[in-house]
Length: 413
Image (cartoon, rainbow, N blue to C red):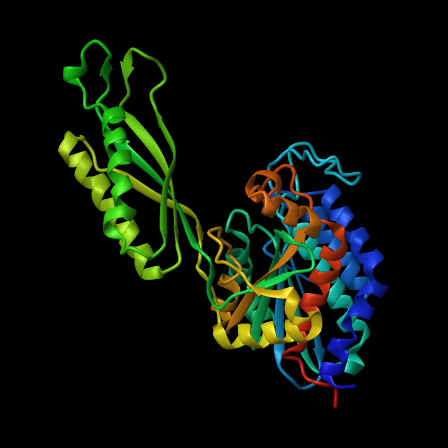
């Protein structure tokens, strides 16, 4: 059997295991675990892999990897994230989260189930393909900790070097549809904690203070000029001040304030320019206010730019079009959210592509779209109402993993 022939039969293989994939998905959804604490999730993944005769490898505490070496040919790495979010579920699903305040509100349960499905089918049909398949179940995506933790724990040394890396994400687009795009697909993301120092005083004696509340307010207003006046029109950047905290009571001028910022960019040169501008503005405003100490800058939850390799993306998109039909594959818009997946292929120095899988009832989506109400009526990722339509979302996601892999894996000799 040729690789293309096997890819053409993928739908039947996945449908044959769809009940198993659905059971896994519902299990993960019922039992969500927060980032870097996915202990039961990792144990279940290990159990399923071992039942297939595969050897699971634990990395970074809760990450799991398995490798299927199946003769000569390319090596393909496929990754799924497995962590949940600190959100109270409000979907009303019969398989809703049983853990208070924790929910799979981003689709990682579907990602894990789909990758397990693809791994099972490849393990059961080794006669139909040749090469190496590396399945990576990554923790801690929501905190940008998991990919780097797996790399730091020896991922590069403990698995074969892949020739290409693949990943996908369910999104609130019509189920059965797959979105691909070359170049930037997800933004780089940086969170920044800024501590500015003032001189505390009694509220009735402001002349003895350096007021950090006024200073912080000036900084917030001035930061609004970074994108509008320092980033070239037509190039993307977002600077958000999500939190400003200072003081505890009305009649005391505090001695410090804290700002929490989030920055999103599609271009690393723009990112550097924005971060440099932020630090310059903060330092200058502190000098202008007579602050008694230098501000502190703490970067955290930093996500890399996800930039799809053109050639790999073109090959995968064509494989999707051949398998699903041209009408089921579209060029997706770039997404301003961020991901840490690209740390893994970047660590290996290999190209990658990242695509989206729709998860919303198409009729519901079309109706909301016709009324201009998609944003209001279709729950997005991280919403407590986020609930992917099981069918055909799981079927599409598992098939997509297999079809993408078979775009590179060879036919068995």
